[in-house]
Image 1 (cartoon, rainbow, N blue to C red):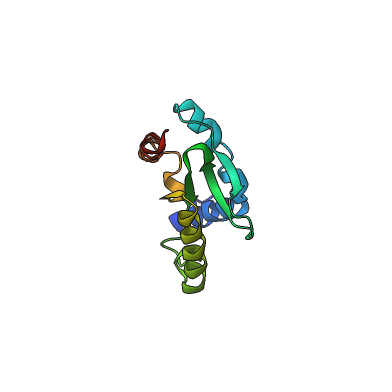
Image 2 (image 1 turned 90 degrees about the vertical axis):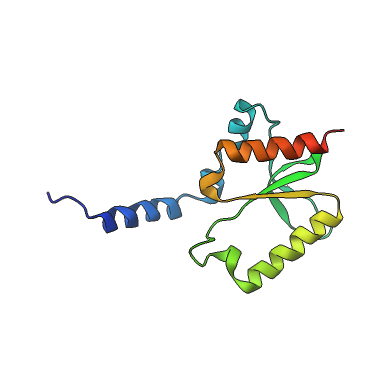
Length: 127
């Protein structure tokens, strides 16, 4: 059998990633946070009384949330005009309600730099 080309390997890897629902790709993040000494985040927390907006991950006791922004370099949802305007509306509403946003890409979710950012935000918001 002939070796797969690099393009075929990349296409298969992308197809596997797309076939994995977002919920499953990020499933281990709460456990990862605990192993790294962070409080366990709440997934998909609804924060607004009238809108159905949700945070990807939130630490409500510190009013900190993390949004995982995918597709930044592939013309994904988070860099198209209409979606960006909706995202601005959501983040502005959260900020008005006293929440502090953090962002990362999916590839950075399980990195030490993300943990350090969350830890700093939580420490800054500790009562």
